[in-house]
Each structure stands twice: as structure tokens, then as C-alpha cells.
Length: 81
Image (cartoon, rainbow, N blue to C red; front, side, top):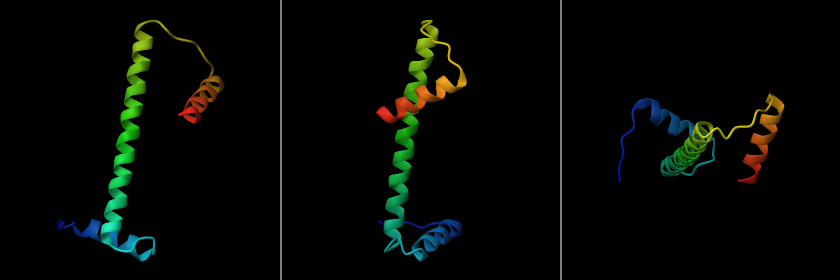
């Protein structure tokens, strides 16, 4: 597969290669695609959680929390996944 990048993106690839973290342009592109997939996966999981939350709100299944309690609850949920 051959791709052509606009000058700004090509310059970014060259900059990434100069760091020494990548052996070639294909490695840079592969890493970028992996990061894009991870971001999209995280966004999909977040959207699913939001839908669950709205469903709970609609059903009246709510618990009032202060800010500190909410943040502790949120951190605990993130660590358990």
C-alpha cells in the first residue's frame, strides 16, 4: 500500500522518525492507527456508560453525591475495569 500525506503530516512523520523511537514511516503510521483505535474504543465505552447513566436517570435510579464522593466513586470504577 502506498499513501501520500499532505506536507504538514509528512513533516510530523519526519519529526517522529527523528526522535529515534521509530525505525521507518510505516512504524509511525501503525502507531498512529493503534492510538486512533484505542481512542475510538475508549470513546465507545464512554458513550455506552453515558447511555446507561441516562437510562438510570430516566428510571429514577439516582443517588445524590457531593463532588468528593463522586470523584472517589468514579476513580474506583475506572480502577476496577
